[in-house]
Length: 382
Image 1 (cartoon, rainbow, N blue to C red):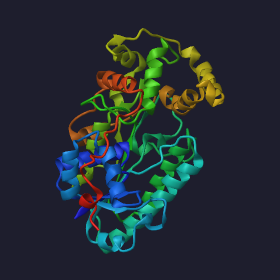
Image 2 (spheres, one colour):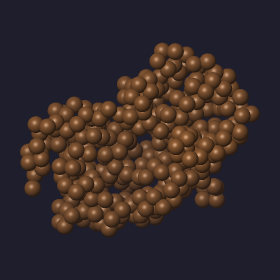
Image 3 (cartoon, rainbow, N blue to C red):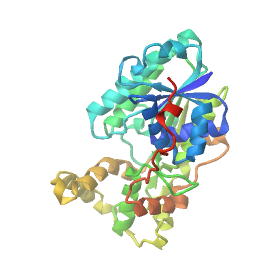
Image 4 (tube, helix red, strand yellow):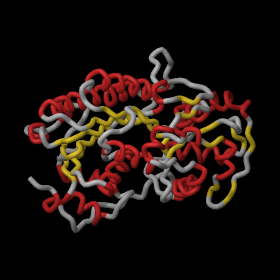
């Protein structure tokens, strides 16, 4: 029996796969968008090298990982002829992680998040009909809570369809949850809602840089356009990956929905910035909340400048993430803390290493190439 997983080649998906390989014994069937098995293996290696050596990855490919070529935006998830039949009766559960984290494009979010999730749900129905599934885990986001200000939000209070959303990503993920609720009513479902996921408490390396870039920019500004008491719900990726893997594997989780967040342990701007260092140096700063609106307007203007000026990328990045930085809302995490018996480490306690790695590598992960001595014929069974 195996766990069918979408999104394994993504940042968060790699953490879930790594935890399942490390702490559990089930086989993993990974849906990968690729033209061949070897291309899929290369994509998986690119994602998983953050967590393991090639030797360990190679061992997992041979003993624990099955690859299903496909694409969630295609009918039947793009599975090749005969693949669905081979999966029926051999899949015990599903973890749906794949998503478009595109906060600007309505079209991309509708295509991947809505249409893609519908295809995954239809596939899950076919698998469940063949043999009842133990669980369907859906990875959503705390952003489904919509526009908020200075609140503590609990899991069962998050969804409000009358509330405005910050962006297409949040809006489509909210409807994805509704889709899962409606179409998989007879399947045991667990919904995970990560908050802002940044870095790893065990090491500084990261392959996801958008939010890190925003934090580095704020830390370097000196004058920070935020209230010093405003809280930031940031959670490390290794805590999120562990929570998804461990709760998915439980026979009977205590709850249906879990916020994977810092909750009441979220640090304020003053506490977080007071802890963070860049290359061992404390960055002096003062808080000027009155500059919040002018700063937002400035970033909007920068996003519209000609690309050759070098300002549009920074402006676009902050234009997208600024609402989540300044909204001073945290998401109650008492459920996941009780389930795991541990709370996530505050960002200020580990974020300096993440920032140093990002700056040192110019916000680019130094991927290791596929070893030349390992050929396609050896790793790609017919």
